[in-house]
Image 1 (cartoon, helix red, strand yellow):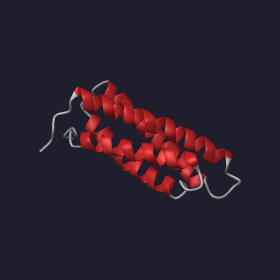
Image 2 (cartoon, rainbow, N blue to C red; image 1 turned 90 degrees about the vertical axis):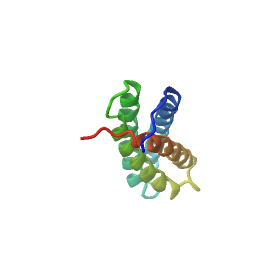
Image 3 (cartoon, helix red, strand yellow; image 1 turned 180 degrees about the vertical axis):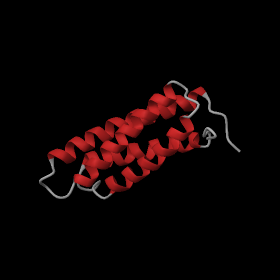
Image 4 (tube, helix red, strand yellow; image 1 turned 45 degrees about the vertical axis):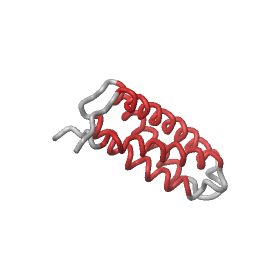
Length: 120
């Protein structure tokens, strides 16, 4: 049974998406600058994908799109994937640790809204 979204939890999800967006952008920038120090290319590309999905999701939530649950389902999936990739580097790179935490929080917030998916 789907739960009704409240303004407070929509706002919290928007904030989580915004935090993950910025963390992913920061992580990608660091990964690109460090590209000569190991294989950070996959992490950078995933960070950029995740940042794009987070931006689209927070925009859909902000305008209260009837499709926000669909955006949230995709965002949760991509954030979980990004968090798993960043976890591989979190011990060596503080920006990966921050990104992992932000993406995990965003995924959790978005999973609450994924149940509000619009019937296609």
